[in-house]
Image (cartoon, rainbow, N blue to C red; front, top):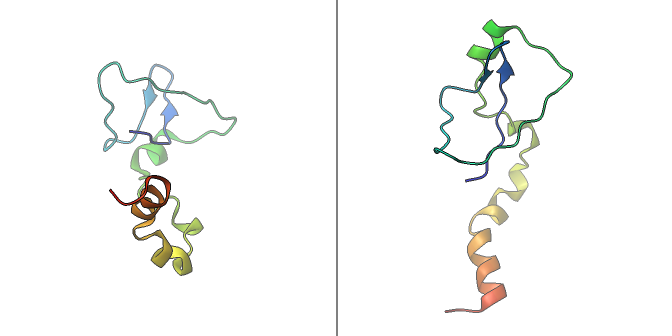
Length: 78
């Protein structure tokens, strides 16, 4: 699993969204930003739909089945 999530440091621990679950001993990368949030706002913020502003509805049809087409193109029809 590869995921990018937003959280914040509360002075003792790094807080991630409640719906994010990592596996035991799973490797993580932590990047500290020069931006600050209030803890109340950070706890209520959901990452769901965070990248929606980058979505291009015109590409949605091409995205459907893109992985399958790429595998078939690279390895041929098995």
